[in-house]
Length: 115
Image 1 (tube, helix red, strand yellow):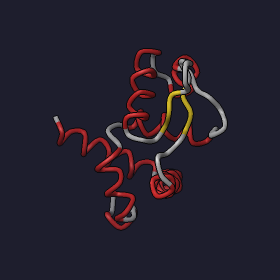
Image 2 (cartoon, rainbow, N blue to C red):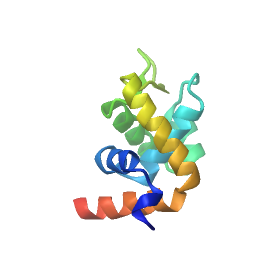
Image 3 (cartoon, one colour):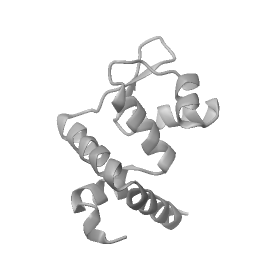
Image 4 (cartoon, rainbow, N blue to C red):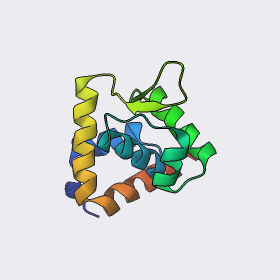
């Protein structure tokens, strides 16, 4: 993987904000269906994880400022905290669609360095 395949801005965002490929996949699923509310069962089926893992991912997306939990409901929706954050996620999504392996390797290499 050449460094130049992934824009520096996207690379930095991944290194700072994306802890795992499953986190990224959950984020991108919510983004793709922005108007929908997501429950843990629905997300679990979509990204092939168990419901406990899906619930943890949804909570992590909220903590990161990428999603919000619906008041009084066990559902979540895509809601970046700022337009700047939304734009960064959009750039990441576009890059991931072209550089899936490169982004995945970057995430795995970074998660290994955190251990």
